[in-house]
Structures are given as structure tokens and as C-alpha cells.
Length: 351
Image (cartoon, rainbow, N blue to C red; front, side, top):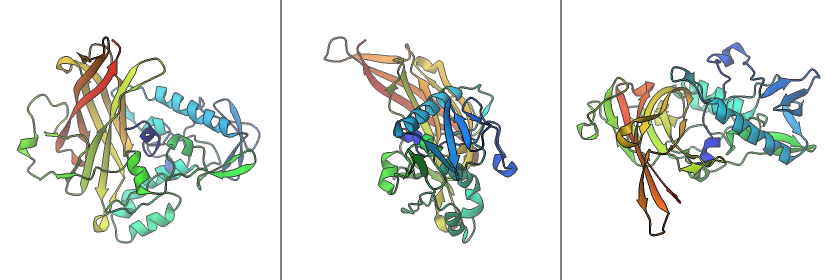
């Protein structure tokens, strides 16, 4: 996904190990992020003392808020590294878990967990929309998904259920998503081209070779929506970026939707598994992960030396780098298939 996309919708805000958090009424707080202070109404978030007033966090300045958002992203980026046998609940989108505070992001996660029980019955969508009125419902074409109305989900974790925060004594509404075009620009909407997968499969779209998961192999081309019955799935490839340590980073995002009553497509909770490899003969495994959460399921990895094909450009010493690979995807709603995604990343370097 594009860098901005990383912080819109996506990926589950539950604390680790909370498969039933919202049924039990509480969550396991990550004390590296939040430490509930002894004084009532005060909480320490990553070393910053924050006051809580009527379900709204209070900060001294906008720069203080920006610093907290930056620290949260950095911390959760590191904490997402995990073993291949773990079920990963979209840790980048973990909730803050502050006693007495319900964030806009908490509301969104509740909605994603509840979605199927509403969308799949007559009148359910209207009830769902009323219950989660603080979210954005574009109702564009057949897209009736609920979207987070803030372009940065990390920021939304600090906002109250109405998208507000108090800065220097003034209540500020931070919602900034109000059109479908904004969602498109963030890479959150389904590609317009839809490919139908028949019940018998499509022989012209399968391939032979090792398959890591059960199910018939089916090639899933990036940036196209693939539909079988009442399910849709698509994959987008991330732009290549370079981090602060000069490491080249890439990735891909798995997105999905379910069709509810009267043909309304919506985001929902699902489980995916991935196995991805890059480089000559695909020898380097870069992703082997299980994610349980709402769409999208985001994957990122480093493009290490030795995995690229170098092509000289007209500028001496400046090279075009191409990295090829493959991702295999298991999607629990379409488990009859193992989706095969060709990976190709291109970037340029001075060596």
C-alpha cells in the first residue's frame, strides 16, 4: 500500500491475545505504550503525561500529539516481527487500552467485528450505520463498507469516539475523510476491474509448481478485483521505500470484501496466511505469516542485497534494480484456492 495507506484503515486494533476482548469488556494493556497513572484522570503514554477528560485526551500542543503518533508507529512497526507459527492480529493497529477511554479506532474495530451480523440480514445495514455513526459510509456504487474517517489510524487511536482531541485547551476535530475519491487516493477502495472466478476454476489462470497451502492454485494479478460468489479479494503491491537506515523496503497488501443483503459489499473480519519469496530461484523467504483481522492485511519486508537484477542506466554508476518473487495466499473465505501473486519491485540506486 502507499505509505499514507498504511495509516488509514486497516489493520486490527486489538491488544495481543484478545480474540474475545470486546466480549469480555477489557483488554490487555501494553505497558510499554500505556501506564495508567495513580492520579485519577491522568495516564502516561510512551513517557508523556496525558489528562483524560470526558473520554477525550488532553495534550499541551499539536507537536506533542505528532510526537506521540510518531512514537506509536515506530514502536508497533518493531513489535510486528513475530514467528511464523503465531496468529498475528494486525499488531500495527493495536488499541491503546486506556481505562475510561474509547477511541475512534476502538469504534472502528468494534464495527469490523460486528459487520457480518448486520450486513447479512434485512434492515441490518441501517442498524449498523446508526450504531457506528461516527464512521464514514460512502455508499459509492456497491461499496457499503464502513471506513475510518481519519487518514492516519495511528492518530485515530488518540481521538475520542467523535474524532476529537483537546490541544492547549481547545477541542479539535481531526476527521479528514469525507469523499470516496480520498479513499481511492489512499489505496483503500477495490480496483474497478472485476474478474469472476467460476466454481470450476479457470484453467487458463492456474499454474503448476509447489503450492504451500491446500487448494487449487489460482493466479491473482495485482490491482484487479477477483470475485467468487459473495467474496472478493485483491492484492496491491507497495511502492519501494528506503528507511532511515538506508534499507530498501517493499511489500504487498491483501484486501477482501463480503457481499451482504441486497448486494452490499462490505469489509469484514477474516483470516489469511501467506508464504512469499523473492530473488533468483525464489530462494529467500521474506514472509510467512498468519493474520486475523479486517481488511487490509499488510505485509512488508526488506529487499536485501543479492535478490535484485541490476541493469545499467545511461548515467554511469546508476542502476535499475528489479526484484521478482511470488506470494502464495490462503484466504479462509475462499479456502478452495491458493492464490498465487507475482511480485515485481523496481527501484534505482547508485551502485
